[in-house]
Image (tube, rainbow, N blue to C red; front, side, top):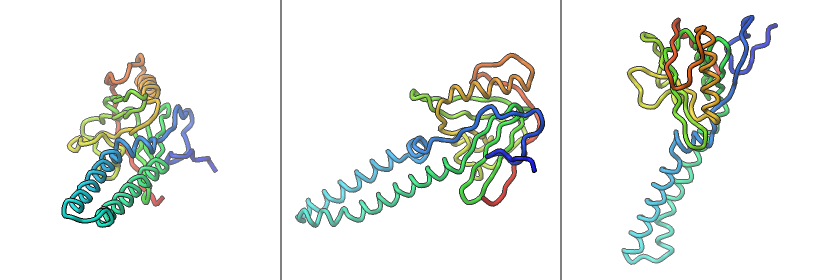
Length: 212
């Protein structure tokens, strides 16, 4: 029986090779996608406000601590759930660049695989950060569509009319982008461009959905 590589919908066809595989960083997802620092600051402000109200009304320090207890409990539960979600998303996601396509395998309760032949990809764009991490978003050929909700957070945020699949919060993003650029150029039989320069392509999206 042919071996199915992790993160791919089936065995690799003859002549196709895996060039890179990776996943989002759960720490970066927690910080930049689920916005844990901002939410943490919100709960800190809420806690300080509740304690200030209790003390200004003549309450004791014990009363103030009791007043802030509910907000502290809610903060711990909320931040804990978001942190767990970021870890689960990272663990259940596999990004694969092969010599012929890009594959996004994701899903916690429901496994979804987005199979993108390079002929389908109209453009690629790198959005990186100072630490070397970043997102690589893809513009699909006009007329091709994917579900924003089904593939979130593996899409470029807020692009709802023309959904752009993306490799989110990956480390060494520029190196991965160059790997993708070379694969796209080789598939199109043209000199390798430098991301985020647009690269041309054409065909159709195939997505496989199966229980995790």
